[in-house]
Amino acid sequence: MSNKRETGHAILSLAIPTFGQLIAEPAFILIDTAVVGHIGDASLAGLSIGSTILLTTVGLCVFLAYNTTSQVAALMGAGHKRRGIEAGIDGMWLALIIGTAASLLLFFFGGELCALMGARGQVLVQAELYLQAIIFGLPGMLIVYAANGIFRGMRKVRITLVAAIVGAVVNTVLDLLFVLVFHWGIVGSGIATLIAQWVMGIMLAIPALVWARKFGASWKPRLEGIASSAGDGFPLFIRTLALRLSMVMTVVLATHMGEQVLAAYQAVNSTWNFALNMLDAIGIAGQALVATSIGARDRDEARHMTREAARAGFLAGILIGVGMVVLGLIASPLFSASPHVQMLITVGMIVQAVFLPLAGWMWALDGILIGAEDYRFLAYSCTLTAAVYLLTLWAAAAVPWPDDIWRIGMLWALISVVFIGVRAICNGLRVRSDIWIERAIAKV
Image 1 (tube, rainbow, N blue to C red):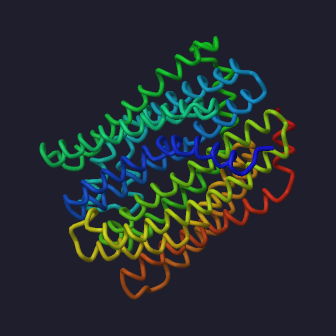
Image 2: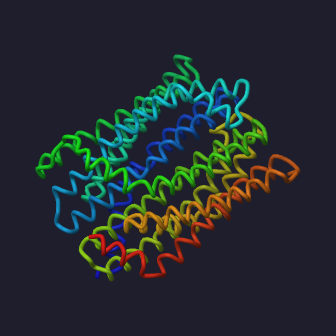
C-alpha cells in the first residue's frame, strides 16, 4: 500500500494538470463575464441565462470524460492497453455526435429556452445573441472532455494543462479584441469562446489519436463501442441532469428577483464554478487512482486512495475558500461597474466560500464513486438531492425577503447547505460501506 506522502504526490501529479482541463469552460465563461459585465447590467444578465444553458448542456455530457476515464484506467490497470485506448476513441466519436446534434438543437430553439428561464426584453435579446454566437463551439468542447478521459486513464495529463492555458489566452485576447476594440458586444464574446473551444479540441484530439496509433488501436468509429459508451454513461447523464436542473431552477429564481440580483448571481456563480473545478480535479485524480487499483483488484489500495483523496479535497476547500473571501472583498469591481451589484457579489462570494471545505470533501468522494463506476447509486442520490433542493427553492420563492442582500445570501446559503449538503451525506454513507468497491471489482 502507498504511504501518505506517495499518495499525496500521486493525487497532486494528476490533479494539477487535470484542473487545467476542468477549468476550461468555466474559465471561458468567467472571462466572458468580466468583459461583458462592463457593457451593462442587461448584457451581464443575458450572459447569465445564455451561459447557464451552455454549461448545463456541457455538464450533461460530462459523462464523456468521467466514463472514459474510468474505462481507460480500469483497462490499463488490468493490462489491456489497446482496449483501453479504443474505449477512449469511442468516447471521442460519441462526443462529436452529441456535440453536433446539441448545437443544432440549441441554435434553432435556444431563444425559446432563454424565454422559458424568465428572460425578457433586452436580457432575452442579449441571451439569444450570446447563445447563437457560441453554440457551435460545443462539439470542440465535448471532444476535449472525451480526449481527456484517455489522458487521465493513462496518467498522461500535462497536455491538458497546456491546452487549457492556450485556450484561456486565446479566449482572453479575442474577447478583448472583439468586444472592446471591434465593439461586437456580447456576440464578440461568444465568438471568442467558440474559437478557443475548437483550439483546445484540436490540440487534444491529435495527440490522443497519436497514442491510439502507438497502441495499435483503430481510429474508426465502432458502433458497438459507441453504443456501449453511451449505455454506460446513461446513469451519469441522469445524475448530471438532476444536478443541472437544480442549477437552472436557481437561475430562474434569481431571474425573478431582479436584473441586479441575477447579474450578481452570474458573477458569483462564475467564480464558484471555477473553484468547484479546482476541487473536482482532486476528485478526478482520486477517480483515476481508485479505478486503476480496482482494475488490479487491490481493495486496500483503493480504500486508502479514497481516504486520502477525501482529505485532500477538504483541505483544498479551506485554502480556496480563504482565497474566495479575499476575492469577494477586493475584486467585485472586475465584474460590474454598479456599486449595488458589487456589494451583492461580495456577499454571495463570502457565503459560498464558507462552505467550500464541505464541497471539497463531497466532490472528492463523488470522483471516487465515479471511478468505481458506481453510476446507479450516483443517479439515485443526485435525483434525491434535486428533489429536496427544488422543494427548498419553491419554499424560498414564497418568502418576502427584505432586500437584495438577503436574496443573494439566501440563494448561496441554499446551494451550499442543501444542494451540497445532501450529496455529502449520501456520498459519505456510501463510501463507509463495502458495496461500491466489491461491485466494481466484480465488473473487472
